[in-house]
Image (cartoon, rainbow, N blue to C red):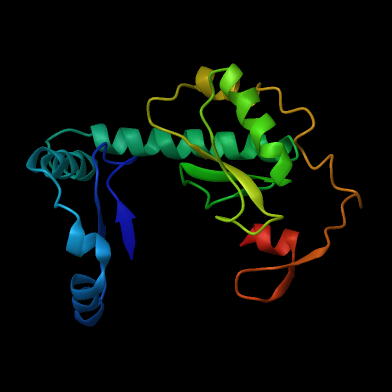
Length: 190
């Protein structure tokens, strides 16, 4: 398992939890380990402090409240996007979700429409995704209010909801990175 201390912990760096054999292999062969510097003490302390807040070790329930707010906000935003007709990837309760846009050519227009209305999204297309699986990634935070979420949902999404798809609701097969042939719907549901 691996993760980052950036979004969730407001710091930098990350971690890898694996067997001793894998850790040793990474230590001896990973360019990032060989040529990069370690996390600075303030960045380490920021991550530790954030973890203590989440676990309640700071003597408060701020972490529990923030996690509940993130979970509620994420599920609300995800369900509203689905009602609008978007295919949304990501687990329920997760603050990170991907909106499937499919058409690589629509990424710049979608990104600009969001930026014009002060909504931050990260668009991801080929080569980071298969050609027909372009998407926009959204991250919900505990500081987002219901009004913020409603504003985000009001972005002019016109034309970005599969309107380009020439065959209606039927999605043709595509090759995934594993080389299997899947329909886009099945790939999007993973």
